[in-house]
Image (cartoon, rainbow, N blue to C red; front, side, top):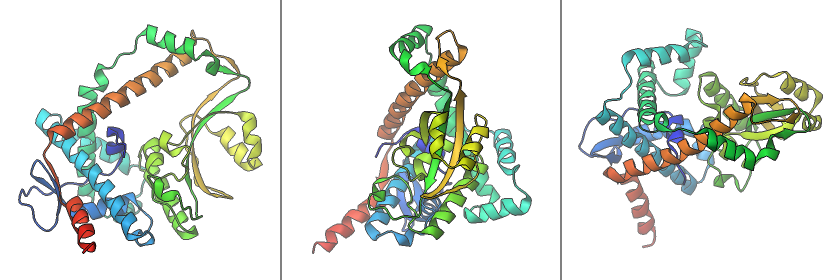
Amino acid sequence: MKRSLAGVLGLALLASSCSKKAGPDVAATVNNRPISYSDLDKFYKRQFVVDAESADEDLRQTRRLEVLRTMIDNEIMLQRAEKEGVMATDSEVDTKFTELRAPYTQEEFNKWLKSQDMTANDLRTQIRRELSLQKLINRDISSHITISDADVTAFYQKNKSSFNFPEPQLRLAQIVVTSKQDPNAHNLKNDKAQNEEQAQKKIQSIADRLKQGEDFALVAQNLSEDPSTAPNGGDMGYMSESALDRASPDLKKMILAMNPGQLSGIIPTPDGYRIFKMISKEPAGQRELSDPRVQQNVRSLLMNRKDQMLREAYVEIARSEAHVVNYFAQQVLQRADAQKH
């Protein structure tokens, strides 16, 4: 399964015990530091908000293996951040905690923490780990990436036709949750809702996470049930305003009224629930390279591509240098072997 550091950072990060002796609650170790089954269970329930009992045993085990692999990657990168001395400071953690806490009343905040099976201290630990990993990657990768004017010009010339809009354009992203059963859903990296109750529960959980400040693209990658847009962070690409004629008048009006960066609420549709994000709006006509917006869009695209490539390589190298023992994976294989006899 393809994994990027962005995906690693987008998930909740839980603190591991400092004990170095493997015991019955140890699912894996990274350089002798354990990851517990209890933390794995918390991670799993948070990632797959729909009742785990709705899935068969093989699917649950596959998901748990995927979640544990992400936790292992998290731990590998955290240990590198610790070694390099780039852990987040108390003031940085306090600032982020206050930012996340701000949209809620105390009662709402406590309710949200309970729904995530977390305490305020757990959240602070999560924030410290996430910020530390971001600082590590920014220092070792992002800060060293440069895109030259020649790179921008070459890309524009090769793709000039894509900057010609015959009518005003909208660029939307979406998160989709449906209540219908889908036999192919198990191939998606998300937790498929199987009925109306599960769909409502899941879309509300997603809306809460977005309100909490989680990145829309990462949430879409992990939880959206639309196989065509989820891998791209929900990005639907550019569409003409006339394409909205196929939507209901109320939905079209709502989307046209959205500003770049704005999120919609939960929108019931005939095939499920959606949350939209307006990425950008563009008037009709050919966009010339002299347009600063074109230059910025091209530069951002090239930066993101290179950043993603280098992050993938960085994580792979860190993984190859770590000593990992996955006890849970060993148990899965042992149980399968025992069933043969």
